[in-house]
Length: 147
Image 1 (cartoon, one colour):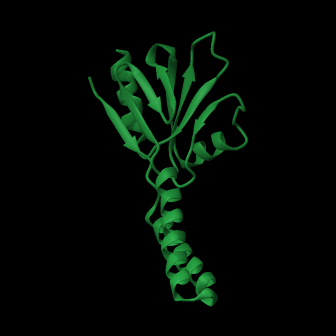
Image 2 (cartoon, rainbow, N blue to C red):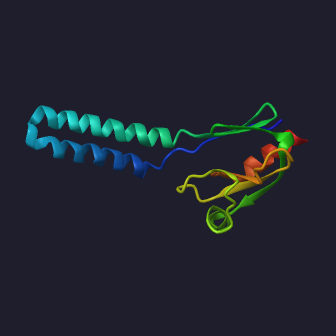
Image 3 (cartoon, one colour):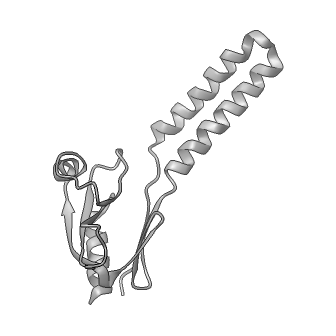
């Protein structure tokens, strides 16, 4: 059985921006003195880093006959055909082709994705859209678990 695990980490540029936010917060606090400036530098940078880390901590896993994507746990029996989407198709499914009932775990900094149909008649969700850096590996892992 082929497993799959991916963490959709934030790009390095976002960490640089978090550092810049810390510096900007420190500069804003500078008129109040050196101690508030250091507090603003550390506090602002830490809050920005926590935000970047939290946003980039989402995982996609295929484990124990289930697809775990963020907070969702979907048994593979409820999944239909998985479609690998290149950057252009992924953008179309994020925008004008999107269904408001779909479960979407998307990250704008990940250009490729997988769209998986939901076959459970009791579930109103038509499909699952998952941003992934390796869509072929994810579809292969789902096919291996289904087989």
